[in-house]
Length: 231
Image (spheres, rainbow, N blue to C red):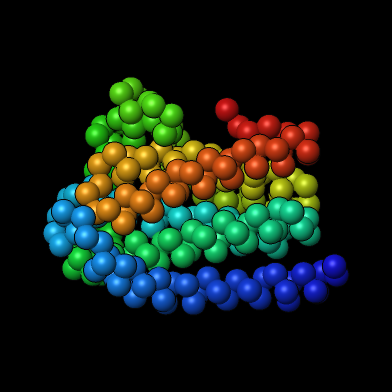
């Protein structure tokens, strides 16, 4: 496929990301209204795990979307571009759902007076692992210096990705996104354990399952390029 053809057929479809943000909130409100669990009618509190997860994962997802659009312009490898599109589309849609919940609950979309992930015991995922039975110990990840939350890239790393090209960009993107997914899985498992709204817990479990699968795929893609995930 030509460069122009790939851009028109694959990346014009990224307009679906914007449409997903428009419709996700409406669809999610409707679905929440049908949730018949015992806590379905209760509006989560401002300091609840449900609200904290929706806010923090929305921010976490936004960076994944940003990185995916960056690598789109830094490589012509179809396999990496297809993966990046899938991640951008999925996480933009999920972000729209979570922001829709916050609107429905009458809660703010951000809480600048609170530390990120403070809704999780210990903060920054302190009481939760990566979904592999580590809920009794320390976090599988800690936020690195300059990163807002565990797994998130720093400004310097984003700039490095913007200036890389070809296989160098592919390797860096895959390494950064594996880190990002590990942090996301850790946070999503926290919601599975602590959130009370049934639909939100199910979304979080889907994130755990989906992102762990993508971590395995990205590890294989790195191996094809003679590289490994970062420690």
